[in-house]
Amino acid sequence: MILSSFFRPEKMSQALRRQLDGQQYVAGFLFDFFLNEVALIRKERPSWQRGFLNGVGGKIEIGESFNAAMEREFQEETGCSITNWHKFCVLKGSDFRVHFFASMGDLSKLQSTTDEIVSVHSTLRLPGDMIPNLKWLLPMAVDSFQSRIMANVQDPSETTA
Image (cartoon, rainbow, N blue to C red):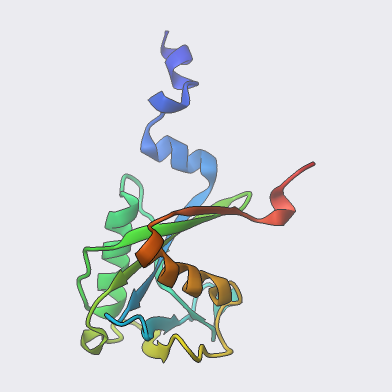
């Protein structure tokens, strides 16, 4: 009886499900109230992101919900508490999942609280030194405020015919 309930996905604990899906991350984009500007962070870690702009985020801790992880990471890296995040995309690979969130708020209150520098950028003239997928994630995030749809995107190299 215990084994049969273990193999039923609806009975799996959140922590076990995350272990099976690989490492879980969150990344968030805070926009101004007119969606003309967005806060990004210049990454130092991991090494493949060093020097590039990305959304604010990091690893989800065991037992932590996606929204709680987004709130915690944003607070830790910007000194600003934002609680009205909405998830708009999940990017899946063979050994990771990134849950992308968006919100609106006062960008003037943000500060860099770590060695990774937070900066504000125009959504109409996005910088060239971003992580490449931000070119489509940022417009998707802006659209999500109107449509409230959520996309699941899988790395094409992970699919089989």
